[in-house]
Length: 223
Image (cartoon, rainbow, N blue to C red; front, side, top):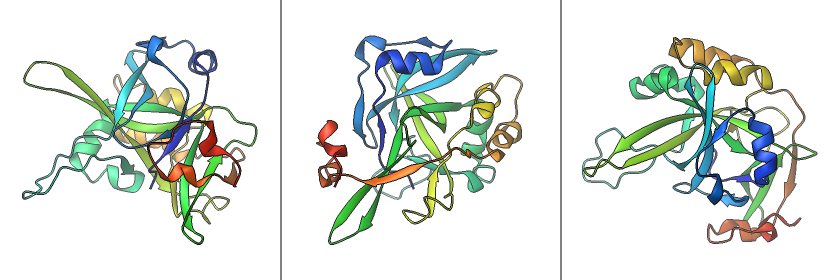
C-alpha cells in the first residue's frame, strides 16, 4: 500500500532529474510534502519512440468494475503480482506505463495513535516510482489524466513499516519501463524484475502529516 508520498524537488531539480523530457504545465509546478489520493502529481510518460513528457495527472485511476450502488473508489495502487491477471491493468502495462516523480513515501505505525514515517533516500533526491496511467474523456471532450502507483513486496529494510512498498525503478529500468511502442505487457513487467537496490532511510515525522490539509515543510519535521 502506498497512500501518501512526497515530491519536494524544486522545478530545476525535477527538470534535471528527468532530462531530456519536455514539460507540460511547468508554470504550475511546486514542491509537495503531503500528496494524497485524488491530488494532482507529476508523471513522466513516453509519448513516441523515446520522446518523454512530464505532465500533471490525478492520483487514482477510475474504477472499472461494477459497484452495485457503492461509491466509486479511485484505484491508487496496482499490485505488481496481480497486474498480469487483471485485463484492465494488463492492458495499461502494455500501453500506459509511467514514472511518478517522488522523493519519499509515507507509512503509519500504531504508536499511541497513528505515527507517520517517511521512507526516502538518505541524501534526498528523486525516487522514480513505476506507475500505470490512462486518460478519460467526459461528455465535453475534456481529458482527465490519471495514474496509479505499482506496489511490490517490501524490502527487508523497510518491511518493518509495511509489508508492501512502491516499485522504485533503478536507473537501468526507466527506459524499458517507459518505452511502450512495440512493447508488450510482459516486456514492461520484466523491467520491474530488477529491484531498486540503493540504500533507503526511514524516520518519524510530525503527526501533522495525518491530515491531508497540511502540506508544508512542517509535516516532515522530525518527531
